[in-house]
Length: 328
Image (cartoon, rainbow, N blue to C red; front, side, top):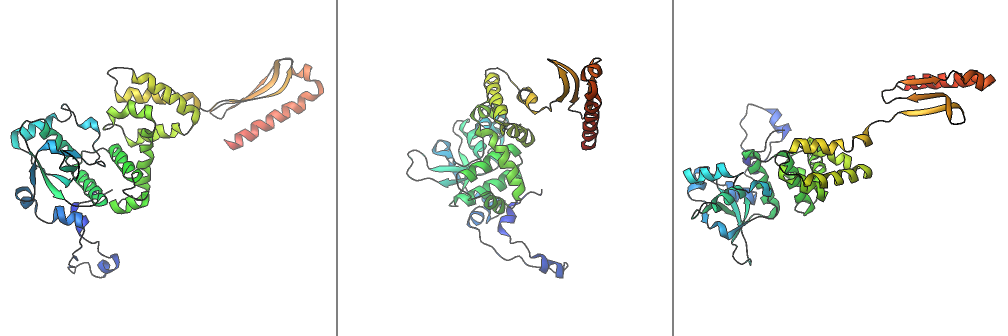
């Protein structure tokens, strides 16, 4: 999937039919007005950095309620490189903020640049540099999405959590609305939203939250599929509570143990059929194994005990074996 560029937000896509008529003819792009994009990207990068920003006291900012930076990012350890960079060279990339009203002590909410804001908080006397927008929630979500695509430091699973929050909070009315707005396919959005269901299970969310950056969508989907079965879901919750008490856990072993606890529920079981028995002893019985093999067991006393019915019973067992073979 190609990445969306910020320029895509302010340029109307050319009609395929018109473009195909003459690929060589220059076609001027019509000017399209999108308030959020105009407010943030209406001038060159150089001008933005020198004129189109404010230096803000970081103590007077808070993250936007729909921002997509999990708390795991906002620690001195995970922000050490950024803190050192700002100390040495200053804040090179601007954030984006929106004015907040009627909140004591808070003047702005941060649409993107939350890590940069956090880093400035760790350096006494440092201001947070940001552009100011009046964009709507939907427009802010688009700008946040595009900025993250270009910075490439948000994992796919973190995107899944962000998209899920935007839909559940009704910033976007539906999956389709979100997909159309972000210009990505609906199946892709559906896949990510399904992966985000992992964190709707509180015990699993608490266990895996420290590893949100490294958790893959593939692994999340595998566990979500297990949660669809009530018996497996109960085992996963119990195991998550058990693993949560461990110190110095790492993602790989946690995922292995979570999947292993439900292996018995998902492993195909052998099927057995008894054709003849005397008392509790099975004299003629068959077993269809999980690998498709059909094993027929005939005890030495079967023929004499079954008498005249032995041939018919054997024939039935053989027919069943042949039928099983055809299914395989």
